[in-house]
Image 1 (tube, rainbow, N blue to C red):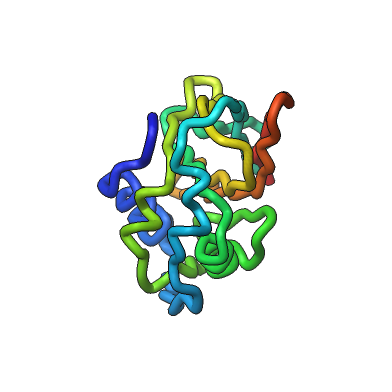
Image 2: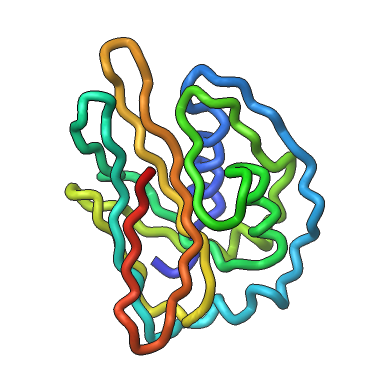
Amino acid sequence: MRVLHDKKLLSFFAILILSGCSAVQQVPISQDFDPTQTAWSEIDGKEQLIGSALLRTRGGDVRTCAGNDVHLIPRSAYSEARMAIIYGNTFRGYVGVLETKRTPATTDPRFVKTVRSSKCDAQGNFEFNKIPSGSYYVMTSIFWQAGSSSQGGMLMSEVSVKASEKNRLILTF
């Protein structure tokens, strides 16, 4: 899939906001979106990123992102500010279903158009094809029910996609 549609990204942010029973704190984003910082990502490239996402249950079973969207977000000052709000850092993060969700108060629609999307297959694998080399964030969610309790959360990792290399990522916590 080339570029993520607004509806899909909005559904992802709805999951971010509504997942679990935890509180939501909207935080003003201090950085304006600058389209020149992500223009490189909007062309088709020659690279591929393959990966998987998984979490372990309290009992040791493995849960994957099967059927869930995975988002590939070009790294920029704006996306860094967003990751810092949501995950508390700009490298790797996890927000559990019962944790207080921190979300950016606004989302620039031009940012939404730079995000690519893929789906995890039944085994929790995903891939992005024809992407340009560069630095990205990868985000997905893994949620499940254990009795009446919601478990899991959202995962993020920064990844550098390099030309002529095997670009592989395992998202876990």
